[in-house]
Image (cartoon, rainbow, N blue to C red):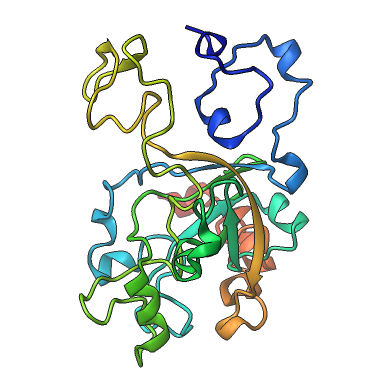
Length: 287
């Protein structure tokens, strides 16, 4: 049944209604429209897929494995801002990042729909609003399409206890002093910008949806399938710089400053990428 059949107007732009409505239009009409949040600086599709080499947090459950998860691992935690020996990051195309004044390795803030993020009524709960605010590192990644951001779904998110630990523990770890829970974000998590609860979709007896396992289609409500469209892992967001990526928030992140990062290559790295450090041998050398 189309949205109008449930009394939902096609031009209703309120956030909860945008989540539930599903209006089908031909491309010639869609290309003339703009997302309602574009005027507020939202310009990126933010998606949070699972890591290709592991499920949920399994790639980051031990220190020695975690340090290899992305470019920000450091067993010595030379930058006291790090929540753990690794930390959450977002992949961004270098061209998009530089347009926004974001250097490789900078800390950034990702903001979802302001009608719902960090959560409804956050003004009345400033302590948890801080916990829910997504702050993470930016990683230059030329393989990311322009206009798209990506954070892998595989790191432990922030809690009130982990944020308190970062502020009160002598080592500065984002670790709950009471329970030992260790976050891999300073604040927020990969789900801070997406809808992490059941979507307000038309889950009625007439709604067609896929079953939790397999490709079987059914109708009506079903437990443990997140929502009719799958797990909540995509949002329309804006991104802003929070702090410099250099140690202690001063200057450029060292690997980028040294020229060992994409879009910041030094001459030696450019030569290496071009194959300049190898040469074909003649026939005598081959034998």
